[in-house]
Amino acid sequence: MKGLIKFLIAAGVIVLLGTAALYAIREWRYRNDPEYQVVKNFQELERRYAEDQYGGETPEETLRLFIDALKKEDVDLATKYFVIDEQKKWRNELLIIKEKGLLDEMVKDLERPREKKPLIENTDNRFNYFIYNDDNILAVVIDIARGPNGKWKILDL
Image (tube, rainbow, N blue to C red; front, side):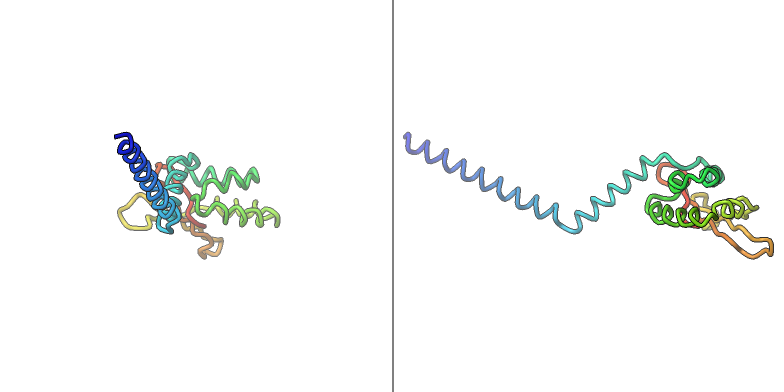
């Protein structure tokens, strides 16, 4: 009888260890799967967008905050008014503009009268602002959209 109990315990331990090993292998494969990595990265980006508190309640407020940051020559703050995916790119662009001493010119251009149009008719989640120079030639297009957290962010300019 003792031998049978020892055998059953040993068999149970082997089954338990085997199950744990199979689970660990499956979990390791899953975590290293490219699809899992894409989903994980997407979820992280979604989280960052939801927690992002920079941007205005209206497109105009976001543009005003962006321009105010540029007036203060605060490139890091100005960059935060862009969508997260574009912040690194625009930080570099704005640093170059600052190094060349052109931030004041950029501010003057952005403060010109602008024409606001929805990107898609009858929608209110994304707009383009068109800014024209003195010769009435299109100088700047600002693409701005409402994020998942309700804040307005600059997509491109």
